[in-house]
Each structure stands twice: as structure tokens, then as C-alpha cells.
Length: 67
Image (cartoon, rainbow, N blue to C red; front, side):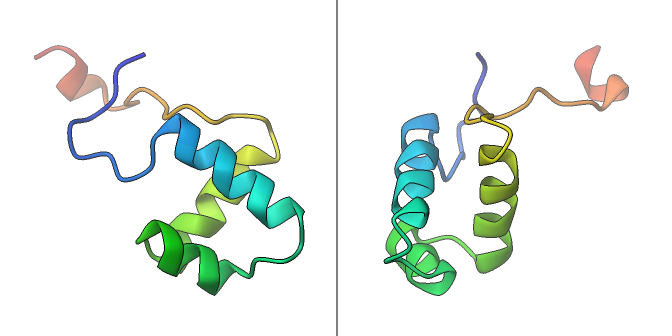
């Protein structure tokens, strides 16, 4: 697994975020404030967490894969 050096949410953070969201005690705005990311980022993480994907994906950009 390759992670970018400026990644904001590690896989462990993504799992914590998902568990806190599942307890229904935390709202999206509270999670965004707690993990210091934007609300659209939280929504994207939650969307992928529903599919049980907690690791960042590899780049699909073929041009930069060849570098």
C-alpha cells in the first residue's frame, strides 16, 4: 500500500471515523472538525466505508504512473 506523504486521513483514522458515524452520536460537521478535514471529504470517506474500503486507492492517472 502506497500512501501519499500529505495524506490527511490514514486507514486507521478512516475506520475510527466510520465507527463514530455508526454510533449516530456524531454528525458530519463534528467529524469534520474532529479530524480537521472538509465535509465533502467526510462524505467521500463514508461513501467508501460503506463498501468496506478504508485504504486510499492507487492513482488511475496512467500518465503519472509511468514516471
